[in-house]
Structures are given as structure tokens and as C-alpha cells.
Amino acid sequence: IQVIANMGPAKDLPNIWPTSGLIGFEMSDPWHAFIVGATKLIAISFTVAGGLRGGYIFPLICSGSAFGRFLYHFLPDTVPMQLAVLCTAAGMNVAITKTSLATTLILSFLAGEQCAIPAILMASICSLFATSYMPFIKSQITRSDIDHSLFHEEHHIKVDSVLEDSDEEH
Image (cartoon, rainbow, N blue to C red):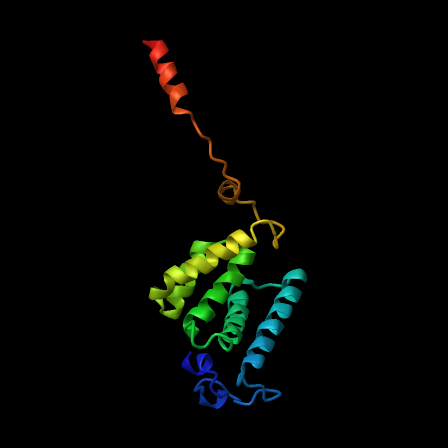
């Protein structure tokens, strides 16, 4: 994980052989991370639209992590790399799956960053509310709790009218 997170060369990975790959592509700079994220999204769209086996949750997390690594290049002194990567991955996953709490817990515990739970949850909730009316999955059920949160109207009760009604009953 450290070699990938620090954009180290593939030759440092003990379980990868051959280390150069087919075209010698390395994640050596942020633009390569962007290319990995975009390519992964394109691959996900073909597999899901084609009805092929496999899911989209962990590919979305992978793509979001690559975009988070790209984003970190522009915010190196303001946001820690772990938060940029995890929050972007959570935001992308929640935008599609609408599972903010599960995504937060899975990402934080898989990454071993339990202290990042509040930040990941905030990114997840922001993504949930921003994309609540964008169904990406045909079979997805509309969440009524989001409707209630977005369109909640306060009902004000006049205290005088309540007191008058109670006086009339006695």
C-alpha cells in the first residue's frame, strides 16, 4: 500500500511481476493518477452497461482514490493525502450507491484510518445530498429519508391558540 500511496515505482512491489507492465506505465505524477481514474470509470461503464459480471463498488473506490491522489497535488499543504484520497473515494462511491454510512465504515477500516471517519462521513453526506436525485442505477429505490431532509417544512404553532383551546375545555 505504501508504494502505491507514495507513487513509488512498481519495481518496489514484491508481489508484482513483471514490474514494467505491458507499456511501462507508472503512477509517477498526478496526471498519471488522473488517467488511471478516468480509465477505470470508462471500464466500469462498459462492464455495467454490458451486463458483465462483477460489481462497481470497489472499482469506484479505486477510481475515486486515483482522483483523490490527483486532487492532493493541488492541495498538498492544506489536506493530508489520506483524507484527500479517502474522501474523494467515498464521494464517488456514495454518488452511485447512496450508502453513506457503509461506505464511510468500509473505507476507514480498510485503510486503517479510523480517525478519518468524521471527514469521510462529511464527504459521503455531501455527495449523498448533491446527487440524491440522480439515479445512476435503474433498480435503485428512492430514499424517502433524503426527501424528508431536503424538503422538510417547519410547522409553527401559535402558543396563544393552544392556550385558548385548553381554557375552553375547562
